[in-house]
Each structure stands twice: as structure tokens, then as C-alpha cells.
Amino acid sequence: MSKKIVVVGMGYVGIPAAALLADVDGYNVVGIQRRSKRSGWKIDWLNEGKNPIGGDEPGLPELIKKVVKKGTFKVTDDFSECKDADVILIDVQTPTNEKGIPYYESLKEVSHKIGQLMPKDVLIVIESTVAPGTTKYIVKPILEEESGMSIGDDFSLAFSYERVMVGRLIHNITKLPRIIGGIDERSTKRAMEIYKNIVDAPLHPTDSLIAEVSKVVENTYRDVNIAFANEVALMCESLGIDVYKVRELVNTLPNDPSNPAANPVRNMHFPGAGVGGHCLPKDPWLFKYGVDTYGKFKVEPNVIIKSRHLNMYMPEHTVNLLEDGLKQAGKDLKEAKIAVLGVAFLENSDDTRNTPTKPFYEIAKKNGANPVLHDPYVRDFEYPFTSDFDEVIKDADAIVILAKHKEYLNLDLTEIKKKMKTPVIIDGRNAYNKEECEKLGFIYRGVGKPY
Image 1 (cartoon, rainbow, N blue to C red):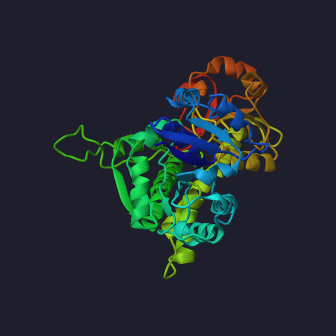
Image 2: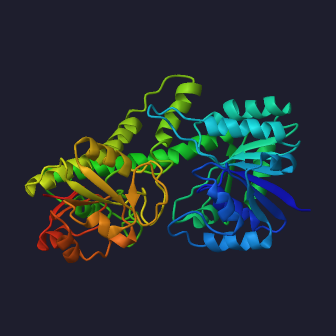
Image 3: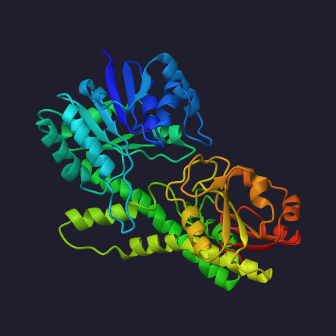
């Protein structure tokens, strides 16, 4: 007997999850996507078997084409598809506002619609990252009130997050262990029955609150470690030494002293011009919000929040490096044309969510500069950008590298210098060798580099 799965939200999580499930024998998958001006085009693209996610995504274009041709995957904007669903996955965005408060409008709207339409005994799984307590205290009451049904007796609810990374979507969903937290034991078991068909790794059953905390802690851990690397980078700049040489030496300490080739026990992260993506910039705030709202007593997460603030500062520091480099060249930041390479937050992707390029652009613009954005992958951004590299470089007073796209790694700097007005390079991603750039006549500044 076939099973119908509805996936609400065709984004970086929903698309690969839907495609993988549609490739399971006996599963028919319907994706639901809002037909908005910004994202509605995805419906037609996916129904034509085309992958709307830009950049390098190994296996995803072929898989989408396969399941559409097979007839087990289609996309619509019609929520009535939920009426006869066996399983409904929720994969909508859950951003935070400037104060770190979760913006749950999409999650609540979708929960209301599902609650009005869902059949008895359906399994609903939240895959969107949420603050601890959201499944139990926000989604569950909405579903029960709208449907008139009760958790356990009439339907099941779980939280199970994806460990996706742009550029490794299919790999991470299928090859990394999966955490599955049900609102009750039956919900957990039912969700595990679904995920075992697409995850070739251990499944870890738990409850929804522990699963929610695990998700935000994973990304908070990384954010804190990146902040540590960024703070070390700033200190190395002050001392006039290269943080990357320090990092290389720190990471030589092996786990097993008797085996120097073993994985390092130290794993200092990479510093850079800022932290982006859907999860890292918001998950520390979600963690704090969950504790503030549902915790038994007040906790002030000083290390976590100060780390977040430090990472938020790095685009401003990159502007400071830019201003200093231009000053050495006898050029003022005001009215200077700045070629900004990279709008996406991550190399070789089109993902602009919380990209550090946005605050960099805003700060540079506020200080009187003329930043011109370039990206070979991005389709849509709130500020003007172009894919015409020559247009960006021509008469530029500085190049600022904010994403380590492969297209930027083998540039002919000699030719680029001829097209520029002022030969300044600001390297926010350790994309270039300082000595080589200076040998070609560039003024070089880099995060964590001496000058």
C-alpha cells in the first residue's frame, strides 16, 4: 500500500528531503510551496524536473529529475493535499528578528492550515529549526485546537532536524546520524519508521525537547568556536602575525600521542569576515529564547551571546581593514568603488541567508563608499548585484573577497590590476597569498593577517 507524504516548504531542507522520500518504493510525495513573487517559480521548475537550488549540489539535480519522471514527486501551492496525507513534514523558515526573538509567522500559519485539513492518525514532523519548547507549546496546541483531535489518540507529532549544509544536502541527510524526538513514544517510533528509509546512519530516538535543544546546541557550539577563531585572528593581527600559521600549528596535537597521524584533539575553526547561513546566526538566540520562555529559572548565557556579538562584528572589522588599505594607497573610503566578490554566505552556493555581505555592504555604504556586488550563483538579493565580473572590477579602488567561490581562486591578478584604479585587496576568506599579492603590487589586508 502506498504512503502519501506532504512536505511543506520547498527550500534547502524541504527539496532534498522530498526528493529522497519520493525515491523510496511505495512513497508518493507532494511538495507545497507558496506561489509568492520571490519563490513561486520553484513550483514550475520542480514539476519540470529542474533543481532550483544554485551552486554545486552533488546528486540533487539527477534525483529530482528521476522522481519527477517516475511520477512520485510533484509540487503545488494547494494545502488541500494534506487531507489524505499519511505524513506531513514542515520545512518552513523560522528566522529571528534583530532582537533575537523568533519570527514564527510561517510556522504558525502552516500549523493552522494543517490543523484544519489533516486526517486522523497522520504523523506530523517539524524539521525547521525552532527554539526549545516550540513543538510542545506552540505547534501542538494549534494542531489540536484546529483539528479537534488529541496527540497520541488521534495523531502523532515529532521534531527531527536535518543536519544539512549547502553543497552537501543529499550527503548530509543520508549519511549523518538522525535525531528523532517525538512528543510521545509512539510519535518517535512512527517517525523512525519513515527516516530509516532515507538515512544510512544511526537513528537516535529521544523526546521533542531534547531534540530541539540538541539542534540549537550543535550550531551554537560551532558559532562559539568560530568566534574563538575570530578573536584569535584579531589578536594575531594586533601582534603582526598570521593566524592561519598559528591555527596550523595548534591543530597538530593528535588525539593519540602514540599515533601522530591521528585526528587532532584541537580543531581550531577558520576565522573570517563573518558568519552566515540560516542556522548559525539565529540558533544561539533560539536557544536563549527557549530558556527565557520555558526554563524554570533565569540563565544569562554570556559566552554564547558574546560570541554571537563578536561574529556579528566581523563585517565591520572587514570594513576597517578596507579603510586602512585604501588609506595606505592614499585613497579615502568615501566615493571609492569597492568590488565585493561574493553575495552568498558560503562558497559555491546561491544561499544568501544572513550573509555577512549584507552588513558589510550597509556599513561601507553608510561610510560613503560605493560597493558593487558580484556573485556567479545568486539569483535574488535585496541589494543590486551582478554576475558581470569585468563590470565590477573596472576602475575599482579595492577588491573585497567575502565568499570563497571557486571562480575567485584562480583569477589573473596581473590582468585584474590593470583594470582597477587602485590595487587594494581585502581578503576576508584567506583566498590569496599575502606575499604573492604584494609582489604583484597590491596592498593586501586580510582577516587575521599581519600588515
